[in-house]
Image 1 (cartoon, one colour):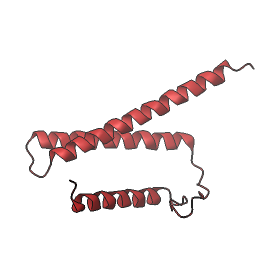
Image 2 (cartoon, rainbow, N blue to C red):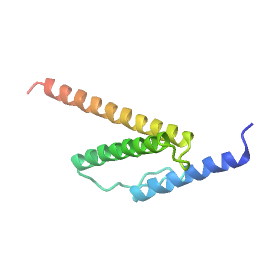
Image 3 (cartoon, rainbow, N blue to C red):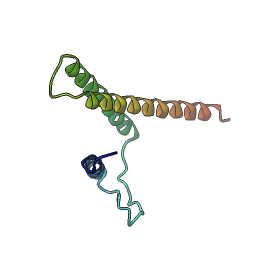
Length: 115
């Protein structure tokens, strides 16, 4: 049976992630009461893509360093932290690969259009 402290810990992490998301995109309202999305500031597509790739890279580097610390026997690093970090980096990489595939597909569709 799941202990109450575990549930509270998960809820606290979810709230923390929500707060981080709100800080990164300040003009979007994540409120469940008001589902209307405010206008998001326009960003350069290339810069947006570069930022996303950099975030994926940071996630992978952090998970790699955490795994290395665990392998070296660092008592402050737990196996669960390492596994969650590795899953996050794997998921981020897969999502980036899917975005890349969609962009390539869209480019190919545009190139096939008659002039």
